[in-house]
Length: 327
Image (cartoon, rainbow, N blue to C red; front, side, top):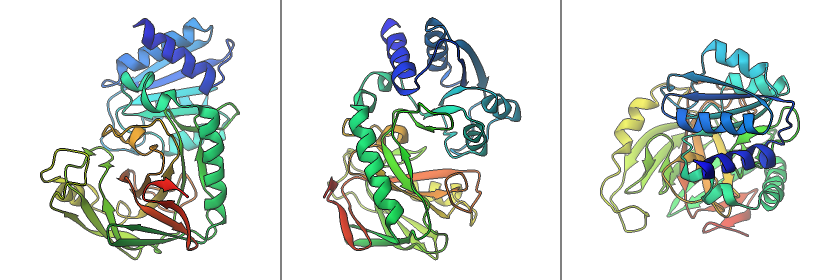
């Protein structure tokens, strides 16, 4: 337990810039309560006034917390959210950031992640790369993902990217911990093509065989399980995700192409937990559902990410990533 507490103290000081006179709100659920208590205890040990709120697990990533939790988030200076489902793309998180809270969302966090993998990165270097990728995304009018014979194009003109650097030191700054990604909301209705997925899917874990998503007019139209071809990291077999995704993403809003993201953390590992998977250096992810909290126009009440491990990414026809490596 001492290692966990020390890791939590390091996160609070290094990533959140916690001062002893601040109030820290820890929002957790019954599945991540132990980690929530460790963060609250660490904050108290640093002299802060720590408050913890425990809710039932949300059904899907992006589902809003109870109104009482949302209100407490807005009234707090520092907020950490170790939860089983993501609060990152919720109106509650966005409202708290607008009110000046510094917020770290930690969906699916495990004890191991507190002191291994992505959390051990040099966050000064991660921040520098993430801000550079954001700058490139901000200037781009369109993106093209090419991967194993599939091509997906997305319009980006007029949209502004978000840099999740892992250091939230100023009022209103927020993002994941562990962190390391830049992401942007594609223009609704512009995405066309086929997405090839061989990493993981938020809420479902690592894929055992690749899958593809057919996209037209900015929405997912079909999910297809493919036969294992020896390329995926897992042991093989059918992923079984297509049917479940068809049922989960069952409205036009839920099938909206919501996000294009790029991982920038060189210590992140493929774990099956999207919190770390989408941060892997040189990976690309596309999410479906809600993008209303980071520049988009669609409210869906859910947000589901799909990870590609070694794709090619072009912005305005210029290569940014080739085979999972930054150019």
